[in-house]
Structures are given as structure tokens and as C-alpha cells.
Image (cartoon, rainbow, N blue to C red; front, top):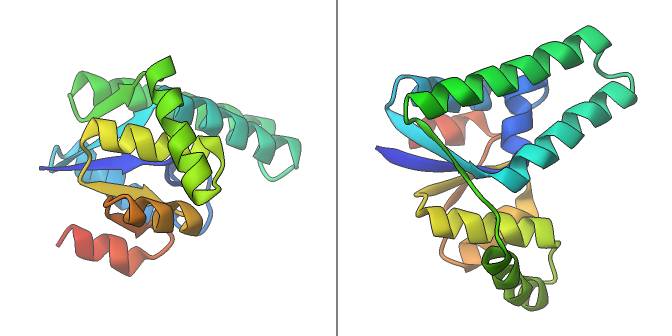
Length: 159
């Protein structure tokens, strides 16, 4: 079973219809079938909440769509955790401290560095992201990645 680290951009695409949603749906369906497992950090949860709220604030989601997205995020996460198909990694000071090396080495945001650190700590096999810079940096740290916005690439990882 492949362990997939879902970054914030990949998670959002599950709950907000946009480019990459088909790939996110495929990833989640594979986890739901227990063919693969997913992992992300508690930090990602906060980023996803903020991103979905941002869509609502910009008028790209109605209040009702926002509420449905939030319920679905919470409900699906809890269900996958109970099935042991999702793990949410806590963020601690040691993980934050590890990010500093990546921030200085690659000149990236600490949030991106934290995703690389938690992906590595989780021993995930693949980082699923829509962030090209994050994917490139992860590769430099020997973390394989796939762009959630490229359905064919995602699909090929599961064939």
C-alpha cells in the first residue's frame, strides 16, 4: 500500500471544484478502498480551512457550499482516520526547527518546508501537490511527487 502525503493544495481540490479535483477524487477513492493511505499534518488542516474560507470570502463559494465543504472535510477525515486510511501528523517544535534548514537552503516559505519535513517524517512514498515549487524542492530532498493537476500523471501512479 502506497502512503500518500497530501499537501494543502491537493486537499482543497477534494472539497472545492477546480483543476485537479478529478485527481483528488481519485486519490481519496483509493484511500477509501484502502488501496492506499493518506497522511497530512495538522498544519495542513489549518491551511485548508483558510483556503476554503478564502474562496467563500471572494464569492467563489456560497455560504451553503462553504458549509458543505467544511462538513465533508471533517466527516471524511474522521471516517478515513477510523478506517486507518488517514493519519494526521501533529506539528511540534522539532518539526518547525527542521524547516529552518530548508528555508535557508531553498529560499522557500516555512509552510512549504514544513510540508516537506512532515512528508519525510511520515515516511510517505509520494507527495501529492499542485505547487510546482514545492514539488521541485521535495525532489531535491529525495521525495517523489506528483502534480494533482495532471490527472494522467496521478492516474499512472495508481495503475
